[in-house]
Length: 202
Ligand code: SF4
Image 1 (cartoon, rainbow, N blue to C red):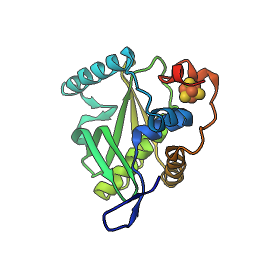
Image 2 (image 1 turned 60 degrees about the vertical axis):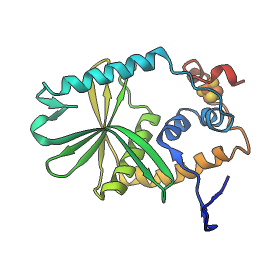
Image 3 (image 1 turned 45 degrees about the vertical axis):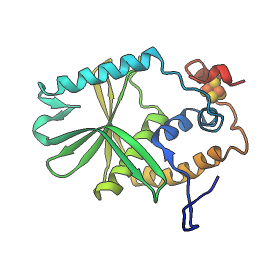
């Protein structure tokens, strides 16, 4: 699936950070959502997560720490920052970005789950946000934070240069799925029980 600009130069199809997350949950899920276009039904659990997230934002103002960091270190807290990078062919909206006094920027993503665990797809999401932030603001991002809303627990995740380099290969692999030439194989059945497209996937 190559696209063309009006000048005839080929451009790569845009991948969203959400595609990255779904791909690392299960590549077949991206195929169902983006190639076949099956509807994505937002679960009540996700809605509760969003509501909790908004309440958490309000609570931040009365605290001595911000997502586990000393408030005095934090210069600014940005919410819902949309970044699109056409050279990379990646776009996404970062839940929260912490800008520290020393100039460091840290992406934060909130999770509303039963367990506090850094799954691979969560980590890949933070890597994608880190790369977008670096390209947008020209600063090196070396860590992100997963905030487990239900447990009110922040977990810091280191982001290495290798993680960021791997993202480029990941984007190529995701684009091959988006081209839709073949259906990716199933992942472990354990994940299917939590999958929003399970009823379409046989
Ligand atoms: S039902 Fe299972 S195999 Fe199918 S897309 Fe979901 S996680 Fe993947």
